[in-house]
Amino acid sequence: MPDRGEGVKRGLVSAEEELAAFRALQQTLVDRWMALRDVDSGPRDVVVVPSLSLEGLHLSTISGITHYEERMLFTVMLLGHPRAHLVYITSEPLHPATVDYFVGLVPGVPVAHVRSRLTLLCTHDASPRTLTEKILERPRLVERIRGAIHPERAHMTCFTVSHLERSLAVRLGIPLYGVDPELLHHGTKSGSRRVFRRAGVGMPPGVEDVRTEAEIAEAVANLWEADPALGRVVVKHDHGFSGEGNAVLRLSPLAEVRPGHADHGGRVARILEALPHVRLASEGLRYSDFSQHMKHTGGVVEAFVEGVEARSPSGQLRINPRRELEAMSTHDQMLGGPDQQTYAGCRFPADPSYRMAIQKDAMRVGEVLVDEGVMGRIAVDFIAVRRSPEGPWEHYAIEINLRMTGTTHPLMLMRMLDGGDYDPSTGLYLTGRGDPRYYIATDSLTSERYRGLLVDDLLDIAAVHGLHYRPWADTGVVFHLCGALSQFGKLGITAIGGSPAEAQRSFDETRRVLDEETA
View 1 (cartoon, rainbow, N blue to C red):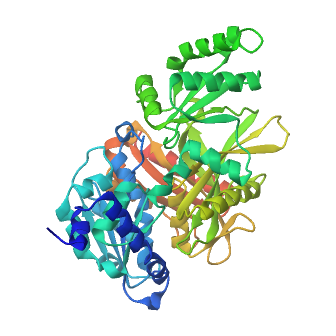
View 2 (view 1 turned 45 degrees about the horizontal axis):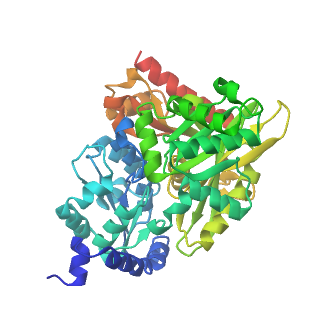
View 3 (view 1 turned 60 degrees about the vertical axis):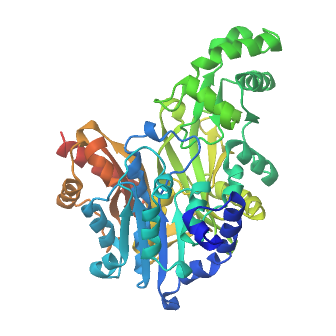
């Protein structure tokens, strides 16, 4: 029998032994994380696993899902530290032009020097499953990763963290910069509402920990009776992702059982009849699957907050390995799909009318999470509404994400491009020269006409039309998700400007040029 250390490497230990090994490794994280910020600290290794390991996420319904692993290519900027080494793992090989593109963005270091410190590995598995699952199925690949690093000076960073990433960290013998999977319940929809309650942050009326159709119908009836003017309710899976686990039930078709026109039992019965006809945010999901998943993981029922104008701002935080809480940014999220439930992009920063209030409430949520021992990147999502055209904005917290999100990539990319930082006193981002910058970003600039464009074609079009990022001005467009372009007609862009209007013009011009070039 192998000894415990060898057993950990080969995944032959019990869950209790794995947890003990993980917690021992985490004790080494602070020194390794601090060393990466110190040029004189000696060589540093970072293992990047951009896996979407989210319970309840139906990977097969998202076009080009494996290419979302490219969203962490902003970590290539860590190679600005001249003694850092990055191991980046993907499901499929990255296109050489994509790699060259990001390597060329690293400021102040020769391209050849950067490229020599970047190791790319992949599973050669395009199936719609989590990347970490694929890695763990390939022990020889795990050994290749171990062979590419010095475990005593390395750490791992991921897009999301689950028990899979914890297992991989233990197999590699390195600490993980991210939330302990034992604390992930704070980031479910039900867990978020409990944290909001502790933080004293306002949230929509709702009921958490519902599972069955009977419980959903009872919750809807109770919310309707508490507010007879209620027009819609949202049913959410606890582990929904980017709105994909949401469904909206309109109450106007059920007017015959509205409060005052039927008893409670009749109202519940009619709602039960209507549930199979809810509008699902995910177009590829059937109601039977939605209902079954709700039974398995649970979820919440919330009042749909209405107004003459509604927005979806968010506040991003970081709890670093030293347990220090930092405000990282605010964004106005761009939403799409039925009832505006799915994430389509973001604008930085959030509207000045409410961005500091959003940041304040997000920090209150972060303080509760620090007390709970959470570490890593956090996003707190809100809904902001105006009840009248000239009325004040009201905001309500709706969700906590204990992971990187679609708003992480553009901010981190901008920070590493120009050496600037977020100013939490104003909610603005300032470049290394002290100038404010704004951006619009999306993971889903999509058109059927873009299908067939190669990465080389995209970069050529951008060069001819002067769309590329201009480091001397700290403005322009940075592309990502390039691997999804040819097959799926999907692309990610971050359009950076010296003003919100300039960022918008850059975003619109990029879309116009691509549409014309593919007309």
